[in-house]
Every structure is written in structure tokens, then in C-alpha cells.
Length: 217
Ligand code: SF4
Image 1 (spheres, rainbow, N blue to C red):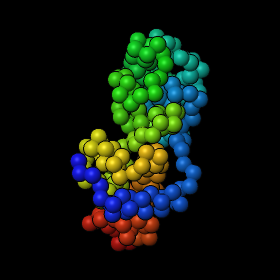
Image 2: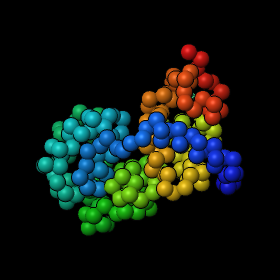
Image 3: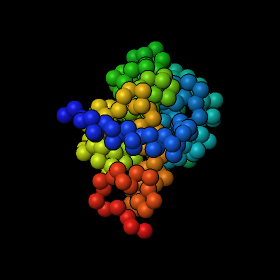
């Protein structure tokens, strides 16, 4: 991948600075007390809201507090608890297997390392990056559907593969900004740069955006 030019970096910085002004304070809305909680909560947050996840995790961790407990849990009982987050069968399988992997490979301790995290079943780069950045304070860029869409529309990247997008964004921004990039692009994608109907009129990044299909009303 070509190294970004000075102008490309400057443009990327202007974009992030505007988003930082728009969203001065931002962090995950998922409730958690430790990396283990956040790891499970992040897996459960697929295709649902963080608020929905926050309703079930207190019950989940009350009944199965540790990876050892969850690895040994009866799947049907777990399904009942997380039912309201949707895709509950698949999510139950995922969190039980990742708990089992954690116990087998890492003595039940969540590793603070991207390559180790993605070895756990059910944990992709996006989930791993969220946990690294949020729970461990290690610079990481989580690429979800919003980051993918926003960064392509703005012309910061030209790729559909999340790994390529992650590398391109990491090349554009200094490490200290990596988490800020993910969190703000996600919020901006939810609030303004909607997948189907972006609110381009009045968008704070319209003058920096190369998206050809901007909406006009
Ligand atoms: S101008 Fe439209 S497409 Fe471009 S970033 Fe803003 S909302 Fe998204």
C-alpha cells in the first residue's frame, strides 16, 4: 500500500479534528467492569443496540461470572438469558466457545494482543480492536460497517476489505488517534452518514467528501 502523502494526512487530520469537535467525549456505551465482560458484551452487540446488551449482561455475569463458568454453562440456559439481543443461538455458541478457548489457551485471562484475541472462536478483528482500545488502552482501529462506509465515502480509503481499510487508516493517522477514529466514524455514520440516506445537506464534512451520490435535500 502506498504511503499517504502529506496532503492526504492533512486532509485526514482536518476530518478527524472536525469530528472531535462534534463528538468531544466518546466511548463505548457497553457496560463492563473488565476485559472479559467487554469481550462478551461486544460479541453480543452484533445486530443490536448497546442498550439492549446492557440489559442482559448483568444477569449473564451474575450467573456465569468467569470464563470457566460460561465455558461449562448449559447452552439453553444461556440462550434464555441473551434471547432479547437477537441471533441468540449463534451468539450463545460464540460466547461459550470463546470462553472455552480462553480457559484452554490463556488460563481464562483475556490477552491484550490482537493476534491472540482473534485466535479465540467468535472474535474477529473488529471485536478484538474494541477490547484492545477500550479495556486495555492499546491503540487499535476497529473497522465496522460504519467505519467502512464513512472512510470510503470521504475518500480516505478505497477498499472494501476491513483489513485493508484498517491498514490504510493506520497509515493516515498517528497511533494516539486510532481509537478516536473508530469511535467517531461510527457515531458519525450512525448520526449523519447513513448507509441509505446520508444527510449531506449541512454535513460538516461535505467540503471534504468525494462521495458522488450526495443527497440534496
Ligand atoms: S457529505 Fe454525505 S456522504 Fe459525505 S460524509 Fe457527509 S453525509 Fe456522508
